[in-house]
Length: 351
Image (cartoon, rainbow, N blue to C red; front, side, top):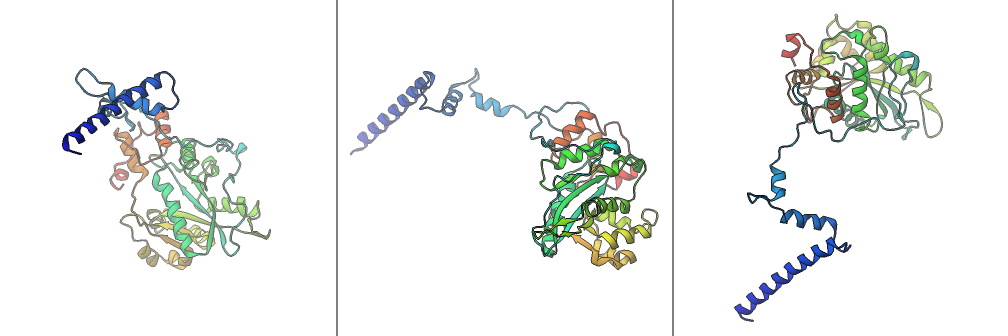
């Protein structure tokens, strides 16, 4: 076959391909089910041009994405992937009279009878809850698995009450709701307990841990093993390195509370950027005394997102996308949280 014959065959192949495409479009318009609607739409887009010669698809690519950042001057247009509380799960109560301790994700049976059941509790403001607050539980899980001693049966957020009177604190019902939105669709084992937030007075962390111990080990008798026996769950506080360093301040923590928290329950400490937790443990008498009940969690990927930074960004009209779950961002927008708030300069400078 010479060169001219090859060219002739190529031209014939191109013409037959074009005729096939035209026939396919005609069949599609006549209801021919052998041509997919996706192919039809693709052909239409390719054929659709504008006056200046640009295809419609190219124009679509030129269009700016709708804004989704918090700002005092604009409303978000995009609300993708809302982590709403699933059907069948009751939201936390708004008053003590209707309060019920949440157990919908608390494991009922211990999978490995050689392990000690463990419940992890995070106490804090969560104003607002961030991805670091969610991530620290996952870091704890990884560390605990390495120890091969505990089996985690549940995790809880316990937002403080309004009586804590800390700068930047949104009303308790909003903080509880944001915690629910953050974890109910993104986790299979985290829950929110509103008991502390509903108290008429500020509750010390030691008292809050006693509450969890009462609900899980006293009222429910602990956790079942596969043989049917009941075993008490260990309750541990999870906290950032900054909180553990505050334990050295006698104006913040009473010595008896430290002995109660660290001696009876124990603490999981997540190292934060710039903090040297191990040196602090060595230098602090009470922490050193209970060092065997303290587990330090190393951050292998450093994350220093803080609620203080998020509140500042919101006040400045800056984006907080990817710092918080979408559902929490939307909730803050809908309720206008943090916009009219001011905080001491010292808080902002040390964030």
